[in-house]
Length: 162
Ligand code: IDP
Ligand code: MG
Image (cartoon, rainbow, N blue to C red; front, side, top):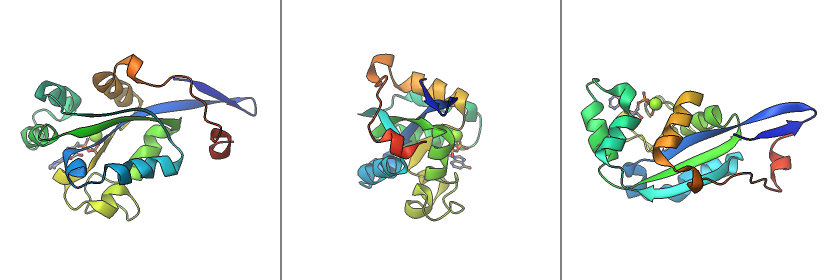
């Protein structure tokens, strides 16, 4: 993680793991979903399309092991390609969760990805890390260090954050 200095106060930059799930890829919403994070001002520092092996899916969703939807979730996330991403920015973890919307699309606010594009909890289009520990864990599961962009300062960043 890098740090920016703003008015003498260190502003911590966060990284979060986001993935377009197989339903989003199949429905042709990869570009639309990426553009929502871009428009919000986040910086894309890792990106790849991949087929998730079952073992990786089970580790990624390990916290849900034993729940009734676990087997179906693993089957779904391994059923077709996903687009895995790492987004960076001030407060990126919460910001990305807000862009994505509530887990159940029936309750997701309009204007969020799930609130605009999805109908059911088992087809909710996108994943986003829910906190700093899960972000670090998930980024480590899906990306090698050398696959991520380091120390990239965009000229536009000063127009996004003070
Ligand atoms: P999140 O994706 O918003 O973080 P989690 O509670 O971590 O939500 O659940 C992970 C994923 O598992 C959800 O995005 C959804 O696809 C699936 N899921 C969660 N709860 C249910 C359920 O009750 N039925 C079916 N699928 C579920
Ligand atoms: Mg979650």
